[in-house]
Length: 274
Image 1 (tube, rainbow, N blue to C red):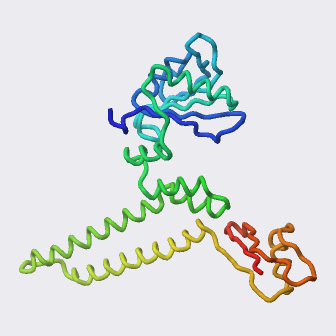
Image 2: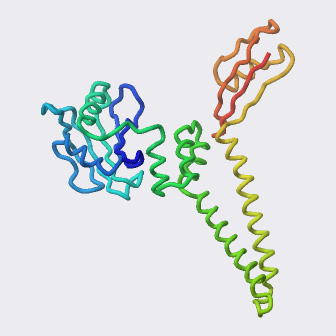
Image 3: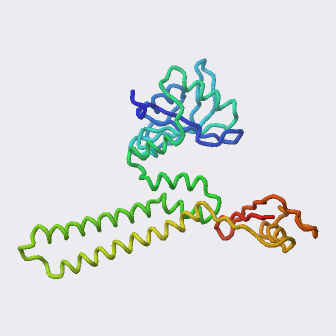
């Protein structure tokens, strides 16, 4: 069986004790396999149902909320099941143990759910990248930028540019192939305008991308100056707590001290130097 056709599963919530843990299952047999250990699984797609998960000996593993998504209307584009159970370590381990018994399933590789979504054309490459950005977002501006990309704004714009380039090429080919025939007046002027508009659109995207990269990675600011000029005091003030020692004795800062600050949604790392 192809690796991409395997039924996969993974814990989608962080490892550790929590009120709820969510386990995702994807693949052609995902619903078939969850039914084997369920007392009352969902009967129709896109339905959530309270469902007791049953172990092989007939005892209840846990009461869950089980949701079934039928392909292609799922995150991965495949049949999918999401199981919400209590987030205790013993509950999670017991579920995984019973779910894997006598069934051809395997633990998903890192990013495999997203990779399948891309392969099944549920996401494009820019949206795949945006998922990582939105998960790692630490500020409001980072979240907004990642969400805009995930919603397909960038993809839509690139498709528009691609369409404009095709129209431009069609006009250029018309001049080459039908040079001896009557062509619409001002076609050459139109081609020039199309080219200039495409260049403007691409330049705008490139300029915005450089800003987006900085918002994603953050800015690094080194605070430099002579001893006892207030570098550490500035770091403490901007951080709103004492991260650096402040004394009248010169040279108390011997190592670089880093402080992360969110300023109006822009992530900035200040470095207090010696």
